[in-house]
Image (cartoon, rainbow, N blue to C red; front, side, top):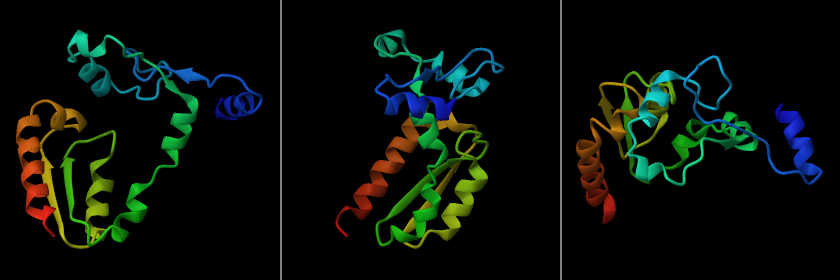
Length: 141
């Protein structure tokens, strides 16, 4: 499907799309897990007024090549704050912990209980304050 989309785009066609989320995890979607679908159901309807449940196949293909952990040791001396959800199935907490170990100082790790979306709902106020204080602490360096 990705190859066919790439060829069609090279020939001038519009990019192909698939749903971002789906209620049925057996259907094709970029994020076909139940946790993501359930989280999107909690968003206020007015925030979703112009949102379309679709993502380009090119974006899906590029996401599969996205490996930020490969560069983590190179960002020092820029301060690094990693907020990791212990049970994250989307960004895989075990990979985040391994990347943190490879990062150089200054760095700080905050571990949240829960899944990927805990930072956006249950822990949002706490992580927002934590991030603000981290950046203020390192702003003058």
